[in-house]
Length: 138
Image (cartoon, rainbow, N blue to C red; front, side):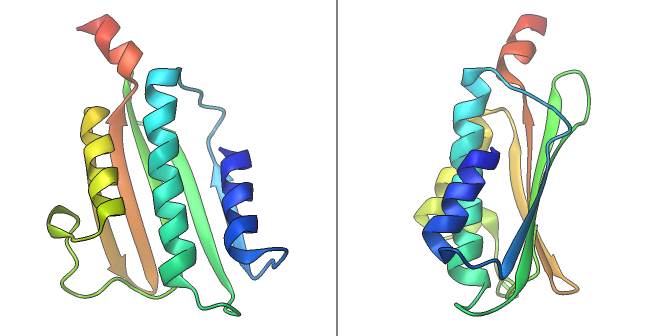
């Protein structure tokens, strides 16, 4: 994940360090059936943060964390302190193709996609299952 985020940072900001990125994965690793859709979700949400949350010369912060919430359950949280989402924004009724893809990939991972924007912090949350571990238990 660090390599993907470093690539996206370079692609959108070049050598600029104005937007700091903090990644907390707690050493969690996934098999390919979970890692690929999760990587696509991270790619889309980080790309959107760079494109829409921050102006070209604006300082900011992006936080990425993955935490275990049970034996097969996890939560990915990507937040930023850039421009907030519109007041009427709803992940279930968006016209954004990229966010529709995030919602679809979240469902593929037996999960849910949601967002909040308050107190100068926009937060996207994906709760999901480790697909292989979940299949082994069911």
